[in-house]
Length: 106
Image (cartoon, rainbow, N blue to C red):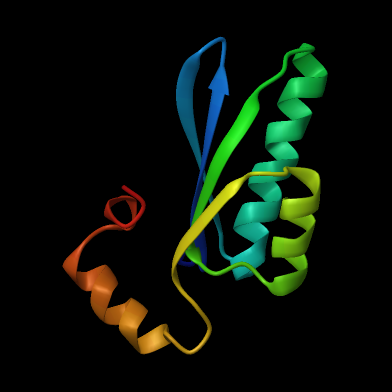
């Protein structure tokens, strides 16, 4: 049996004037989905010698203070949004039954 994701995040980025979205999900921790998305984002740029402009990160769950601080330092001006924070677990369970994850970030 596979585990349900703990968190899903969406990165919005721009390349050559075109906007793209990439998603990431993790069963490990709320921050892990964001961390692995950012690692992949950086790795793709390095391996392909290309540059993307990171515009926004949406996460179902609020990133930890340490991760927020790191993202603001690494990507100045980055828009970071989320729908839920610690303590909202019951609110999340109810909301996810009413609409799918991708409807939260639009």
